[in-house]
Length: 335
Image (spheres, rainbow, N blue to C red):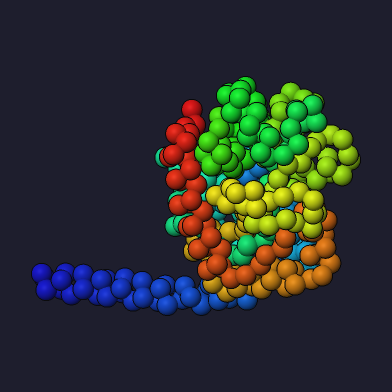
């Protein structure tokens, strides 16, 4: 009787093992079939920021082109809050099937040193797809501020420590960290006035509520072109840019440590089939090579990037290291 029971147990174990082996063997086939049908329904691009900012502008350009190239509607879903962590966490938890994507700015890196208890790991929980747009920042002051150059702004800040104010899109945002990097290199101290986003920060500058700002080129360029609303002093690009040819780069003014160019990138949840990543990457690179797309990006002061998933992954790792040092050196904390 005992031997019969043992034999039955062995048979059940063998059956379970065979079922497991069959399931494991079938998984790659299912993933391949899923990738072959992709996309079969609308795709959602989550933007972890409010509408109207640089990342949102980029997302809507990408959504339009992806929809045309992939043959499915591509919807932009703005999920602001938590310093971009709410929208990013949503994508990290999404099914890895290519239908929920994240279009993130450099904030995916800057949140690491600022939020010790992030609900996701930017490296482990996301699969890089491709870099999208490249941006930089413009240092500008309100016309009422009695300076016409970076050197004069530095002199004013040294003469009046903590009295010259600057706006940011919020404590710990990339605009805040960019200014902190500038202050450290220039050895000055200014008064930080955080706002809930880059748009209200720029409105405050135009309204003379603050005196200075580092603002993304795509957001401040319309104000510059309007004339008389802001006075531009420098750009954080490595050299002068075609959009503002008369404005010097901080690097040429003896502040090379203040060079900041940022990429926005598309990420999928970790575990997304490689065939789907490759399809999305190919679509992004096809888009990047379009003269029309390049011109549309250029019209708002952006560069279109493209490239490999590996290149985006390396960029993210390097930016985490860079901004972790800035946060630590400046002693920035998010309460």
